Length: 154
Image (spheres, rainbow, N blue to C red):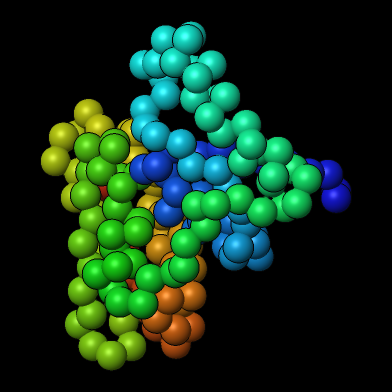
């Protein structure tokens, strides 16, 4: 719509936000990154945090630029480390391997079934993972996700 906007994201969710933006064609979508968590901050701490990022918000709204935009990973390990923080904040973890030169398989670990609902469904995770892999390692790769929730019968 052409209106300036400022995306403010906590650290563990940067990779998820970047992947979601890339899925929509905005690979370099600028965002402002703040420490996590914010929900446990006092009102005074929230105000201090807001004051600390106000210049960056102004820059983003006026110039369309913000710090915190990093380059995409170049190795599978770096891709995993870019994607994993948001999952880890929900009690899950992520690994990946290449069984052959055309396939990347991500493995999602959710040790506590109570946290299973906190983690995005595989139908949302897989496109984000694939977008990151294709941008960092090449579009020729087939990306798969082993999600333990997919094998649990209702």
